[in-house]
Image (cartoon, rainbow, N blue to C red; front, side):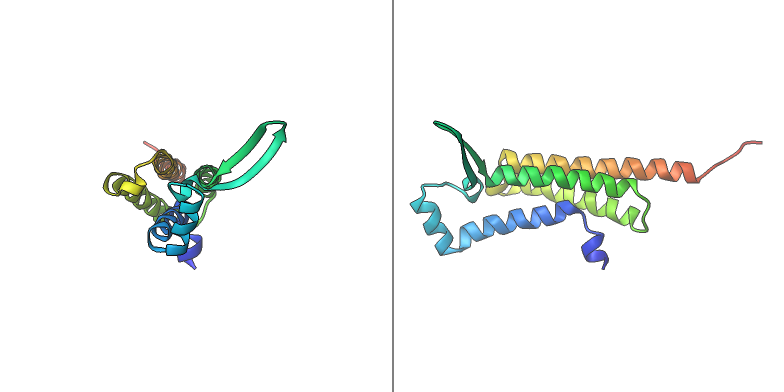
Length: 148
């Protein structure tokens, strides 16, 4: 159960991002769709197109959906860290590991060297640091040393 509930939300975002790029590289039908629509990567794939007024169109791309989901995940993770639970230290450690994976992948893989991945990595680092600070403050309140 810890594997699902105790894992950082950014772990799932990282897995989805890797899956998106592996699918883009290794699935021939996907490559054909991108080629016929003249799209460079799946991050540039339009998810939502809506016409607001005459000549004005709102387009939401996959990369922006990742950033929206990342913002929601950051809120969820900070809220989880602020509530008392039995997985506090392990969740914080996992969040730091996921942050380091984001940083390493950003420097190692060409497909990860884009602003979307960098911003998601920064969000993951904020999540890990915020969880650590909240955990330290909670531990400080639990320990009361009186000099005498």
